[in-house]
Length: 506
Image: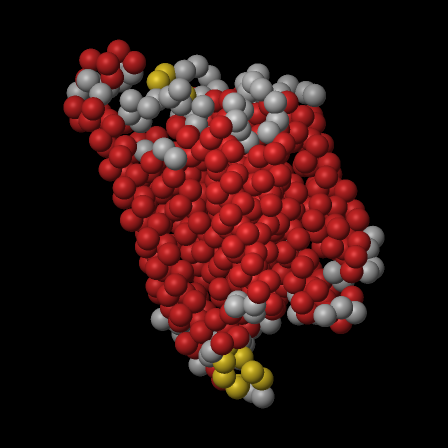
């Protein structure tokens, strides 16, 4: 391993984050043609997305906790190696079975996001950690924004295997960068790995998300769907009771129940819906025939190019969000992002008639996504103990995935329910997109309300700190007007490596 400057460290980890996020949207544009290419049913093809999602929601908290216990760099290299193996397997696969295994291995790498966030927090000085963590968290959206157009355009000229060779190259580059430039964190948690807790959480999440993703195929009232939902509730209750009794739990539920953490995780689910709706639907709107009354009749390539500014927008606004968070608190940053998502989804529900206007709207929506994704880990790490940051961020990543998975299932059901005939094709009716974007706007608005409570909690904490104590810990605070620059009594000064210059309360 070579010594790395802070900038090189950030680049090394963010390349891994973008690559991981790319895996989740890699095959989405190809789903309509995979049944013919692989000789399987449409229901079987949907598992190429479901397997990745399920492996991701299990891998994020499990690998995050393993990193807290055994070394974040060590587990990061392991996870990146798994992603590389899955990408290579997909590149050499010509049948459904190996490709399904490859997609599951790619999904398991979702743990890179929480591990990267914690490594940056532990390794960087306080004045660099905020913007770096913000950018790392936003890679989850940046990779998705880049992945959809790339996955839509590249196979037209090279074949679908090229996507997996591209994923293999990016995975290998991520692994090499991490091996050479990412140092091991000195922060370790005590105790053993909670195997029963990992098994219980995995089972509960699978029982929840499996019917969410497959409910439209199985039937929402079928015994299999309802049975899995019921099993999820029962397992979650039993798992929660066990986590409260064990000495070193997989997820510290007492920390997760703190208002700041709980409200942030709830907002993460809703933000996932608000963000992913645009990612999933806007390309379909662009390519829909003009005869529908809402479509623009673009080609797949043009639609991909039109969505390119979203990735650029997220790259710009992710580091800028750190400045807003440092000045006014990450809670306010989260609020601003949620308001932008609510506003842009509401405008999209009106089905604008200008392609340029649509591109402008989704670019602003991407900025809102960057702000929300960048703010959430900062709020979480102000509350979580330093030895549990990877696991806590892993849980937050799971919450985002629950939101995006629920969004995908709900939007799919809406589009097949409200249909029309145009140019001899059965296509979603305008009402379908109006309802879908309206739901996304509503979810984003509720997330904004939760963010308002977070802002109020932060201000209440700040107001409760005696001014002499603030001045003693922060010499830059000179009077009452500066009190809002501090995170509140939950945080105390720490040295280099703490997020934003503060460490969590015990």
